[in-house]
Image 1 (cartoon, helix red, strand yellow):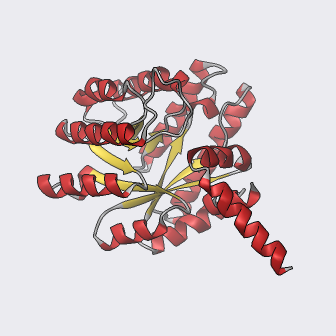
Image 2 (spheres, one colour):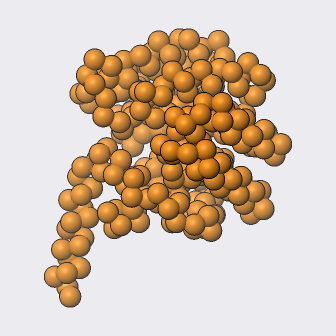
Length: 284
Protein backbone atom coordinates (compact mmCIF):
# COMPACT_ATOMS: atom_id res chain seq x y z
CA UNK A 1 0.00 0.00 0.00
CA UNK A 2 2.90 2.35 0.67
CA UNK A 3 4.22 1.69 -2.84
CA UNK A 4 0.83 2.63 -4.24
CA UNK A 5 0.51 5.76 -2.10
CA UNK A 6 3.85 7.11 -3.30
CA UNK A 7 2.35 7.45 -6.77
CA UNK A 8 -0.77 9.37 -5.79
CA UNK A 9 0.16 11.33 -2.67
CA UNK A 10 2.59 14.23 -2.40
CA UNK A 11 3.75 13.11 1.03
CA UNK A 12 2.88 13.19 4.69
CA UNK A 13 3.83 16.83 5.31
CA UNK A 14 2.80 20.22 3.96
CA UNK A 15 6.35 20.81 2.71
CA UNK A 16 5.97 17.75 0.47
CA UNK A 17 2.79 19.18 -0.99
CA UNK A 18 4.39 22.59 -1.57
CA UNK A 19 7.26 20.95 -3.44
CA UNK A 20 4.82 18.95 -5.58
CA UNK A 21 2.72 22.00 -6.43
CA UNK A 22 5.78 24.07 -7.29
CA UNK A 23 6.91 21.37 -9.74
CA UNK A 24 3.44 21.26 -11.29
CA UNK A 25 3.34 25.03 -11.66
CA UNK A 26 6.72 24.98 -13.37
CA UNK A 27 5.24 22.46 -15.83
CA UNK A 28 2.34 24.81 -16.62
CA UNK A 29 -0.24 23.12 -14.40
CA UNK A 30 -2.37 24.44 -11.56
CA UNK A 31 -3.12 22.45 -8.41
CA UNK A 32 -5.74 21.70 -5.80
CA UNK A 33 -4.41 20.88 -2.35
CA UNK A 34 -6.34 18.31 -0.34
CA UNK A 35 -5.59 17.50 3.30
CA UNK A 36 -6.14 13.77 3.73
CA UNK A 37 -8.61 12.90 6.44
CA UNK A 38 -12.33 12.22 6.40
CA UNK A 39 -14.99 10.63 8.57
CA UNK A 40 -13.50 12.24 11.70
CA UNK A 41 -15.10 11.17 14.96
CA UNK A 42 -14.58 14.22 17.17
CA UNK A 43 -14.80 18.00 17.11
CA UNK A 44 -11.09 18.17 17.97
CA UNK A 45 -10.16 16.19 14.86
CA UNK A 46 -12.37 18.40 12.71
CA UNK A 47 -10.74 21.54 14.07
CA UNK A 48 -7.31 20.02 13.50
CA UNK A 49 -8.16 19.41 9.84
CA UNK A 50 -9.35 23.01 9.53
CA UNK A 51 -6.13 24.26 11.10
CA UNK A 52 -4.09 22.23 8.60
CA UNK A 53 -6.07 23.77 5.75
CA UNK A 54 -5.32 27.19 7.17
CA UNK A 55 -1.63 26.30 7.17
CA UNK A 56 -1.89 25.06 3.58
CA UNK A 57 -3.63 28.23 2.43
CA UNK A 58 -0.99 30.36 4.13
CA UNK A 59 1.74 28.35 2.40
CA UNK A 60 0.07 28.90 -0.98
CA UNK A 61 0.31 32.66 -0.41
CA UNK A 62 3.81 32.61 1.09
CA UNK A 63 5.19 30.51 -1.76
CA UNK A 64 3.23 32.27 -4.51
CA UNK A 65 1.74 29.01 -5.76
CA UNK A 66 -0.98 28.67 -8.40
CA UNK A 67 -3.28 26.52 -6.33
CA UNK A 68 -6.52 26.37 -4.41
CA UNK A 69 -7.89 23.88 -1.86
CA UNK A 70 -10.62 21.28 -1.80
CA UNK A 71 -12.30 20.13 1.39
CA UNK A 72 -14.26 17.06 2.43
CA UNK A 73 -17.11 17.82 4.79
CA UNK A 74 -16.78 14.64 6.82
CA UNK A 75 -13.21 15.70 7.54
CA UNK A 76 -14.50 19.01 8.87
CA UNK A 77 -17.06 17.39 11.14
CA UNK A 78 -20.21 16.79 9.06
CA UNK A 79 -21.05 13.55 10.86
CA UNK A 80 -20.02 14.88 14.26
CA UNK A 81 -21.76 18.26 14.37
CA UNK A 82 -23.23 19.86 11.24
CA UNK A 83 -23.03 23.36 12.73
CA UNK A 84 -19.35 22.88 13.53
CA UNK A 85 -18.75 21.62 10.00
CA UNK A 86 -20.44 24.65 8.47
CA UNK A 87 -18.48 26.98 10.73
CA UNK A 88 -15.22 25.32 9.65
CA UNK A 89 -16.11 25.63 5.97
CA UNK A 90 -17.13 29.26 6.31
CA UNK A 91 -13.85 30.13 8.04
CA UNK A 92 -11.90 28.59 5.15
CA UNK A 93 -14.05 30.18 2.45
CA UNK A 94 -13.66 33.64 4.02
CA UNK A 95 -9.91 33.17 4.39
CA UNK A 96 -9.63 32.14 0.75
CA UNK A 97 -11.73 35.08 -0.41
CA UNK A 98 -9.44 37.51 1.41
CA UNK A 99 -6.64 36.40 -0.92
CA UNK A 100 -8.74 36.02 -4.06
CA UNK A 101 -8.64 32.23 -3.78
CA UNK A 102 -11.17 29.47 -4.34
CA UNK A 103 -12.44 26.54 -2.24
CA UNK A 104 -13.90 23.39 -3.75
CA UNK A 105 -16.29 21.34 -1.61
CA UNK A 106 -15.63 17.71 -2.52
CA UNK A 107 -18.43 15.19 -2.89
CA UNK A 108 -18.25 12.01 -0.82
CA UNK A 109 -20.53 8.97 -0.65
CA UNK A 110 -24.25 9.27 -1.24
CA UNK A 111 -25.07 9.61 2.47
CA UNK A 112 -23.59 13.13 2.32
CA UNK A 113 -24.81 14.35 -1.07
CA UNK A 114 -27.88 16.29 0.04
CA UNK A 115 -26.15 17.89 3.03
CA UNK A 116 -23.21 18.90 0.83
CA UNK A 117 -25.39 20.53 -1.81
CA UNK A 118 -27.49 22.27 0.86
CA UNK A 119 -24.39 23.81 2.43
CA UNK A 120 -23.14 24.92 -0.97
CA UNK A 121 -26.47 26.67 -1.64
CA UNK A 122 -26.35 28.45 1.73
CA UNK A 123 -22.84 29.70 1.02
CA UNK A 124 -23.86 31.01 -2.38
CA UNK A 125 -27.00 32.61 -0.93
CA UNK A 126 -24.75 34.47 1.50
CA UNK A 127 -22.72 35.89 -1.35
CA UNK A 128 -19.74 33.53 -1.33
CA UNK A 129 -18.87 33.20 -5.01
CA UNK A 130 -15.40 31.73 -4.43
CA UNK A 131 -16.76 28.29 -3.66
CA UNK A 132 -17.52 25.36 -5.95
CA UNK A 133 -19.07 21.93 -5.74
CA UNK A 134 -18.58 18.43 -7.18
CA UNK A 135 -21.09 16.18 -8.90
CA UNK A 136 -20.58 12.48 -9.57
CA UNK A 137 -21.69 11.06 -12.91
CA UNK A 138 -22.27 7.63 -11.41
CA UNK A 139 -25.22 8.85 -9.32
CA UNK A 140 -28.66 8.66 -10.91
CA UNK A 141 -29.69 11.93 -9.25
CA UNK A 142 -26.90 13.98 -10.82
CA UNK A 143 -28.81 15.42 -13.79
CA UNK A 144 -31.57 16.53 -11.44
CA UNK A 145 -28.93 18.20 -9.27
CA UNK A 146 -27.48 19.92 -12.34
CA UNK A 147 -30.90 21.38 -13.17
CA UNK A 148 -31.54 22.50 -9.60
CA UNK A 149 -28.17 24.27 -9.46
CA UNK A 150 -28.41 25.81 -12.93
CA UNK A 151 -29.71 29.21 -11.79
CA UNK A 152 -26.57 29.71 -9.70
CA UNK A 153 -24.30 29.28 -12.74
CA UNK A 154 -22.11 27.20 -10.43
CA UNK A 155 -18.47 26.25 -10.64
CA UNK A 156 -18.74 22.45 -10.78
CA UNK A 157 -16.21 19.67 -10.94
CA UNK A 158 -17.78 16.67 -12.65
CA UNK A 159 -16.16 13.30 -12.00
CA UNK A 160 -17.24 9.70 -12.37
CA UNK A 161 -17.21 8.97 -8.63
CA UNK A 162 -15.38 6.20 -6.80
CA UNK A 163 -17.69 5.13 -4.00
CA UNK A 164 -19.47 1.77 -3.99
CA UNK A 165 -23.17 2.64 -4.09
CA UNK A 166 -26.39 0.59 -4.36
CA UNK A 167 -27.60 -0.01 -7.91
CA UNK A 168 -30.89 1.73 -7.23
CA UNK A 169 -29.11 5.08 -6.78
CA UNK A 170 -26.01 4.64 -8.97
CA UNK A 171 -25.14 3.48 -12.46
CA UNK A 172 -22.76 0.55 -12.63
CA UNK A 173 -21.69 0.10 -16.26
CA UNK A 174 -18.98 2.27 -17.78
CA UNK A 175 -21.12 3.35 -20.74
CA UNK A 176 -24.03 4.43 -18.54
CA UNK A 177 -21.68 6.50 -16.39
CA UNK A 178 -20.04 8.03 -19.48
CA UNK A 179 -23.46 8.94 -20.87
CA UNK A 180 -24.45 10.65 -17.61
CA UNK A 181 -21.09 12.43 -17.50
CA UNK A 182 -21.55 13.80 -21.03
CA UNK A 183 -25.08 14.93 -20.31
CA UNK A 184 -24.03 16.63 -17.07
CA UNK A 185 -21.24 18.71 -18.55
CA UNK A 186 -23.33 19.64 -21.60
CA UNK A 187 -26.22 20.87 -19.43
CA UNK A 188 -23.90 22.72 -17.06
CA UNK A 189 -22.24 24.59 -19.92
CA UNK A 190 -25.64 25.38 -21.39
CA UNK A 191 -26.62 26.90 -18.03
CA UNK A 192 -23.55 29.16 -18.02
CA UNK A 193 -21.57 27.19 -15.45
CA UNK A 194 -17.81 26.85 -15.27
CA UNK A 195 -17.05 23.15 -15.57
CA UNK A 196 -14.02 21.31 -14.27
CA UNK A 197 -13.88 18.10 -16.29
CA UNK A 198 -12.24 15.68 -13.88
CA UNK A 199 -11.44 12.51 -15.79
CA UNK A 200 -8.69 10.30 -17.14
CA UNK A 201 -11.06 8.81 -19.74
CA UNK A 202 -10.04 9.69 -23.30
CA UNK A 203 -13.62 9.37 -24.56
CA UNK A 204 -14.89 12.00 -22.14
CA UNK A 205 -11.91 14.27 -22.74
CA UNK A 206 -12.56 14.18 -26.48
CA UNK A 207 -16.26 14.84 -25.97
CA UNK A 208 -15.50 17.82 -23.74
CA UNK A 209 -12.96 19.21 -26.20
CA UNK A 210 -15.54 18.88 -28.96
CA UNK A 211 -18.08 20.96 -27.00
CA UNK A 212 -15.41 23.53 -26.12
CA UNK A 213 -14.52 23.95 -29.79
CA UNK A 214 -18.14 23.95 -30.92
CA UNK A 215 -19.17 26.71 -28.51
CA UNK A 216 -15.90 28.61 -28.54
CA UNK A 217 -15.55 28.55 -24.76
CA UNK A 218 -12.72 30.60 -23.29
CA UNK A 219 -10.57 29.39 -20.42
CA UNK A 220 -12.88 31.11 -17.94
CA UNK A 221 -15.55 28.47 -18.69
CA UNK A 222 -13.63 25.26 -18.15
CA UNK A 223 -10.57 23.38 -17.01
CA UNK A 224 -9.44 19.77 -16.94
CA UNK A 225 -8.57 18.08 -13.67
CA UNK A 226 -6.53 14.93 -13.05
CA UNK A 227 -5.18 13.09 -10.03
CA UNK A 228 -1.55 13.37 -9.07
CA UNK A 229 0.40 10.52 -10.65
CA UNK A 230 -2.32 9.50 -13.12
CA UNK A 231 -2.23 9.95 -16.92
CA UNK A 232 0.61 12.45 -16.75
CA UNK A 233 1.01 12.23 -20.52
CA UNK A 234 -2.63 13.31 -20.95
CA UNK A 235 -2.09 16.29 -18.64
CA UNK A 236 0.99 17.33 -20.62
CA UNK A 237 -0.89 16.99 -23.92
CA UNK A 238 -3.72 19.20 -22.68
CA UNK A 239 -1.26 21.83 -21.45
CA UNK A 240 0.44 21.84 -24.85
CA UNK A 241 -2.99 22.36 -26.40
CA UNK A 242 -3.43 25.57 -24.41
CA UNK A 243 -5.96 24.20 -21.91
CA UNK A 244 -6.01 24.82 -18.17
CA UNK A 245 -5.03 21.68 -16.28
CA UNK A 246 -5.36 21.36 -12.52
CA UNK A 247 -3.85 18.45 -10.61
CA UNK A 248 -5.41 17.15 -7.41
CA UNK A 249 -2.58 16.99 -4.84
CA UNK A 250 -3.42 15.14 -1.61
CA UNK A 251 -1.07 15.04 1.35
CA UNK A 252 -1.11 14.06 5.00
CA UNK A 253 -0.91 11.22 7.45
CA UNK A 254 -4.13 9.54 6.26
CA UNK A 255 -2.46 8.07 3.19
CA UNK A 256 -3.66 4.50 3.83
CA UNK A 257 -7.38 5.27 3.59
CA UNK A 258 -6.86 7.34 0.44
CA UNK A 259 -4.87 4.55 -1.20
CA UNK A 260 -7.66 2.09 -0.50
CA UNK A 261 -10.06 4.29 -2.43
CA UNK A 262 -7.64 4.49 -5.36
CA UNK A 263 -7.47 0.68 -5.43
CA UNK A 264 -11.25 0.53 -5.31
CA UNK A 265 -11.41 2.84 -8.32
CA UNK A 266 -8.73 0.99 -10.30
CA UNK A 267 -7.97 -2.52 -9.00
CA UNK A 268 -5.38 -2.98 -11.77
CA UNK A 269 -3.08 -0.76 -9.70
CA UNK A 270 -2.67 -3.65 -7.26
CA UNK A 271 -1.16 -5.67 -10.10
CA UNK A 272 1.23 -2.86 -11.01
CA UNK A 273 2.40 -2.58 -7.42
CA UNK A 274 2.79 -6.35 -7.07
CA UNK A 275 4.87 -6.54 -10.27
CA UNK A 276 7.08 -3.70 -9.08
CA UNK A 277 7.67 -5.36 -5.71
CA UNK A 278 8.37 -8.72 -7.38
CA UNK A 279 10.85 -7.10 -9.76
CA UNK A 280 12.70 -5.49 -6.85
CA UNK A 281 12.81 -8.76 -4.89
CA UNK A 282 14.04 -10.66 -7.95
CA UNK A 283 16.78 -8.10 -8.51
CA UNK A 284 17.92 -8.49 -4.91
